[in-house]
Length: 352
Image (cartoon, rainbow, N blue to C red):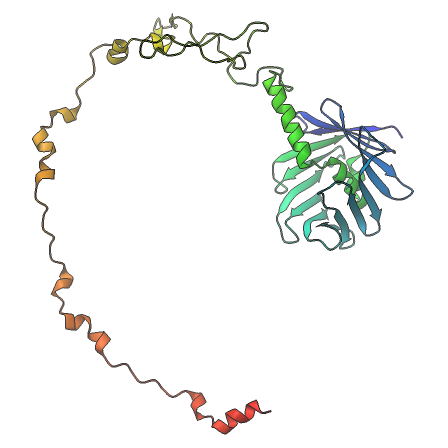
């Protein structure tokens, strides 16, 4: 059987490619976007076992997956990693995922439905975490977050084979294993993207990742920005800013638009204090309306004596009337029905 190349996109099939999968009769190779091998899975059909191998040392087993008529058992050989069991329920229409073995807590429920497969997090009564939606034409699987109408996190496109192959429980468990992203995988992918951006590369457009800027000219260092003159000292050059993109026309001289209006485009340090204060139209700063209020009138209220508080209406109510209800004699309590039961009858019930 010739290996089939499966393509994974980070989003819809129009977004960038995040992974490749080489699927064949011998196993599955997981490749990153540059087609460097990241993980390796080998099949052993005679014993219903799939093993994850170290790509650099293929004789070293990292994990082993044992399939039987009850589901799948994952065995780990790394310190600190807990095994998982995937057990069929409801006539293999559901799979219960337990953390830590056969007697561990149920972490997820995978349910096979007519329109696709749902993955419920936080046990049997949890919320839908992911939905695996199969393309009706059998060419792709869309993985949505949060439900059937959630955002598409990943799209896995199949070439040369149908996606419906993985609708069977045992096949889907294989698919779930070699397409899952661990925390380590996500960290490595994020580090690679950060390295590309810092290196001035963008895989999607080949342009600078920063909006409205231009990348520095190769072989030419970025200009130094002069510091602010303070207390008569000489301005100091800013630190190394070779990683910052500059807008080349930011310090261009003033120009005129189509209406012959002057457009200022100069550095703020070149604008004198008088220009800032007076503005282009001149006239200086206008007096505020509060300047016309005399000081005596402003502070008159603070010098006044505080006004006395008026007597409240409640002060006219006599104390006797206020506390009349509290002094009334309470009604006598009625005899309870249990008081009519003779003592012998009560005590005799406990001796039976």
